[in-house]
Image 1 (cartoon, rainbow, N blue to C red):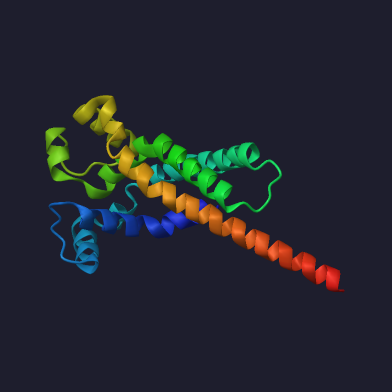
Image 2: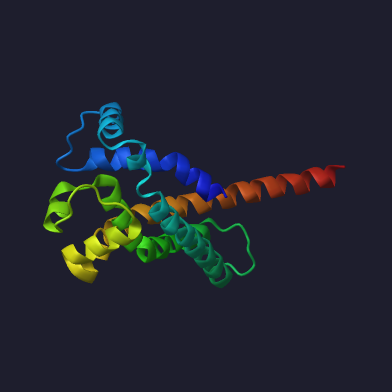
Length: 187
């Protein structure tokens, strides 16, 4: 449920961010991007990639969590507070989840940006809609390799992010648990 709500709120922000990041972006600011997209494409443009986003985030989080737990079981079987094991397990879990879901991210990015050159090369007239169309277009443009464009950048981006997230989570879990135990022994 949290992923559904998170993606419903964040998908429009992702559309704006990606359109601003394009090398040939026509937008001067986030506000100009929002106005132009709203006026020329409508509200649906902000949610064109929503199902792809969900389809990506659910397996990403599943792979991420399962891999982290598996690695923790291997490198930290006693489940002690061990920052090094949390960093390593978190980073590797993020890397694997990012790599596995890169094809969905490539399709989501194409849906969000509606990149004109790519669409014209694929003979797409108008707007690209839907995950299935995005998958066909990516394959038509670059074959199987197209699904993995940017995989290294995505892994490099995710590894520190997930390593930090798990480390912070484990620190607060340790700190709060330790504090609860100390408070219990005082009374």
